[in-house]
Image (cartoon, rainbow, N blue to C red; front, side, top):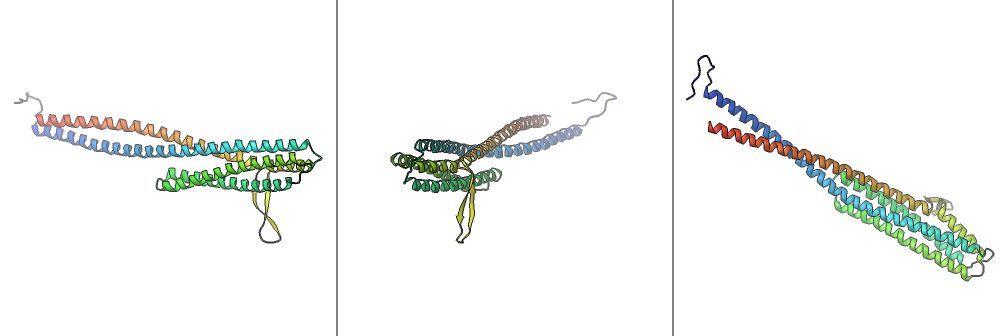
Length: 283
């Protein structure tokens, strides 16, 4: 039995019990807050993990688009060099004419026009794909199927550009063969000179709209400019996604660290509550 010394304050068992219960209630309330914090941080970590996974997919897609655009740019430079070589070869027989060269040039012009439009379409599809990807990164409700379809359309457009460039190279080879086999190489020189200028000079492509007037319905830079611009845009897009990936990863690492701290604090509070409850029962 506890004996109170003379002159000391009297401590009742009820008061001690009330104090212990108040301490236990305070710990329980603090645990509730700690659990809520852990749940909130866990939700943040989960969201950032999903975002990081999405960024990884988008970065991979942007990397593929960048590689394709680079390859097209290199192939385009090779086509330009082929055109330059063709002009220089024709210059050796300046006074000769090539009867078949006019048809070859017309075909090359048609392919050039087609390539211009394909590249323009490819750029539009890639921009659309990048916009959809950015929207997807911000809004997970956008369907993955839509992202996939837009990405596939962009890749198909890039592949069409590459195939048409190969066809254009074949046209150059055919024109070179015609200039070697024909006697009138003077005309071939003039046409190859014009062809090189057409590939390396920005121009407007006129089209008729059914009336007597000719309107410029499509305008684009030279083949070389368009291909280099497409590569620069693809590289910029890749760099943007790479920065987004780095930022998301840093945010995720920070959120994981905060979650670990909150979990340690919660376990500490739970251990304290268990100890306090055990002590209260033992008294």
